[in-house]
Image (cartoon, rainbow, N blue to C red; front, side):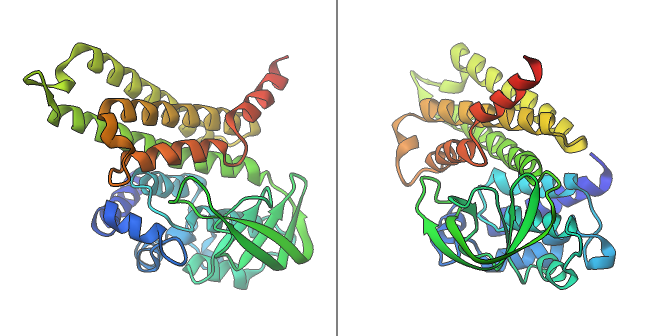
Amino acid sequence: MTEERELLRETVAALVDKHASPAAVREAMASEHGYDDSLWKLLCEQVGAAALVVPEELGGAGGELADAAVVLEELGKALVPTPLLGTTLAELALLAAEQPDTNALERLAEGTSIGAVVLDPGYVVNGDVADIVIAATGTTLSRWTNFTAHRIESMDLTRRLARLEPTDAADIGTDPGLADIAAILLAAEQIGAATKCLDLTVEYTKDRVQFGRPIGSFQALKHRMADLYVAVQSARAVVNDAIAEPTPTSAALARVSASEALSKVAAEAVQMHGGIAITWEHDIQLYFKRAHGSAQLLGPPQEHLRRLESEVF
């Protein structure tokens, strides 16, 4: 990681630590928009989170996909609800258009407009709060200038989803592979969540005493947590490779690896925390729900595995 990217990570981590406590996350996910407007403003103004992938000449920061991935990973650690994923994808879609809408790009980069990309109209991330919507079919891009949005209640309350129906749309260019880019960015977010979920579990096993000893000192649990650490770090390596060289294959590998790692860590976290983990008051249940919700978002792991199988057989 470059020095600039590490500084970006530290800055986002500091904002999350200060403004996105577990209580604040719960308040944000229950709010009208599904995210904390004040934190979103701070991320845009102090970090330029929404401007990272937009070229400087269009009002952005002139960064790369890896910069957006760093921010999403940090936000994923605390399950912070933000419209960053949809906004970033909408910017990439507009940049790929035959005639980019510079005004819309500037608004997205500033954070004053919220973006969403429709890969499946049945569930669109932040679809109910977006005002700039692009649909990607795998071959073409179309901008939905008028549409209706219906919020969908899902298991993962930290991520807002909506069903969108267009009433007015126009083709704007060729799809650059937004589904694969979305898969890579989502995988980066999953790695963040898996990392934090494991950290919380390790911390708990150090504090929880049974038979006169912290349960983390029991060899069986040590082995299980070591296996989880290997799973997360292995998945991180795969995701980092995909970020460095985005391709349909690397995107599929990233999604499978990240989904499996987060699901495995969340499941073990529930087991090691015991009954308290599935109570509403405890945060582990939020990570468990994020794990299962994210695994099905943008196509379940089985779908990505079939894509990989088709390249081998």
